[in-house]
Each structure stands twice: as C-alpha cells, then as structure tokens.
Amino acid sequence: MIKMKDVYKQYPNGIMAANGFDIHIKQGEFVYVVGPSGAGKSTFIKMMYREEKATRGEVTVNGIDLTKLKAKQVPYLRRNIGVVFQDFKLLPTLTVYENIAFALEVIEESPKNIQKRVMEVLDLVKLKHKARMFPDELSGGEQQRVSLARSIVNKPKVIIADEPTGNLDPETSWEIMNVFEEINTQGTTVVMATHNREIVNTIKHRVIAIENGRIVRDEQRGDYGYEA
Image (cartoon, rainbow, N blue to C red):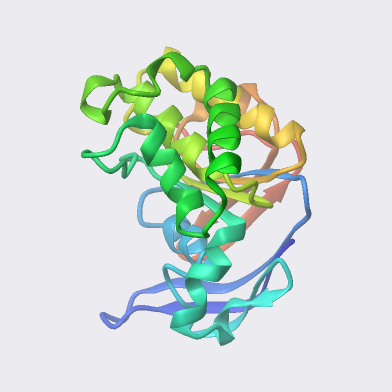
C-alpha cells in the first residue's frame, strides 16, 4: 500500500526532515505517527500525497512511485487518497452538502451518484440534518466531520490525517476518532500524525515514532511514548 525506501528530504534551508525513512504500511492498517514538534512528522505525511517530494529514495503509494510523478499527474493520484487537515480547509461559500459533492464533481461523477454517495457519508458522520448549513454555522467538531466526509466520499484506499484532532476539545476528538475507526474497519488504510497521547494510548494501533528526521520506533499496538 505505502512504501518508503531509503527516503531523504532536505529543504532549501539545509534542514534534513527525512533522514533515510524505510517503511511499509499494508492495506487496511491504522498507523499513528508521533514525535516532538519539528521531528519530521508532517514531511513524512506530506510525502505520501506529494505535497512534498523526496530529495531521493522511493515513495510508493498504490503501486505508484511518487518521486517520478509529474506535477500534472498529482491530482489523479489524490483521487485515491483522502487527506484530512487540522484546520478543516472547507470552502466557506459552499454548504456542507456542496463541500462534499465538490470532491465528486471534479472527477465528473454523475449527479445521481453524487447525491447518493454524499448522503451516505453524511449519514456516516451523523450530519445529514446539517447538509444545507454553511461551515461558519457549524462547531469545530462538525466542520472536521464534514472534512472527514469529504475525504472519504470517493472511496479512497488510504486516508492521511495531519493532526485531525489538534483544534478540537477532548470529547469532540473522541467522536472524530470513532469515525476514523469505522472507516478503518471498512478496509481503508489510515495514517494519522498526532500529538494526542490519550487517544494513542487508548485506541491501540501501530505507532511510528519520528525524531530528528529518523524513524526511532515502529511497534504494533504501541504507546505514545513521550512525556506530557
């Protein structure tokens, strides 16, 4: 599903954010990515959907080597990857329904299929009753659920989440995690960068820890492993 082989990423300022990543994530896994701020977690995550390009090495997702991908091919890659951000990134002038439908309109899905699928994912995130509302009429947790619905509406094989509970209160964070768990049980691979130790220590999954651009720990059903 996702492979990194001898991957390095050096930024123009000289910072080495990836220093020899070697990793294999299988279809259907749920993986937490943890580590101190500035450790290289976001770079690790962003290289999976080609927001960042490796300086050298191989990054393969769904059998595609992202390091050889041309810029014009990146949008096609992302049709099979759902991305969830800390700050939601919803379009403020579109309703909840329209924000989610937009992801299907750009791939020219039929209106009938769009309506059916949007209502399915709204049901999954328990927001069918707010389909006609705008983002600024929703709570932060509701906005994140819309963002999550949008990321899965085209049935991607993998969901990549960068601090998806970072701006949410504890109760709302658990609600979001329940949705991620449901998505994962349906066979979707989930890779999540997080600082939330309580979630990592309670809902056990594989943990990859990154420090100074290196993978220092990779364990099944691991703990967060850092002091509060």
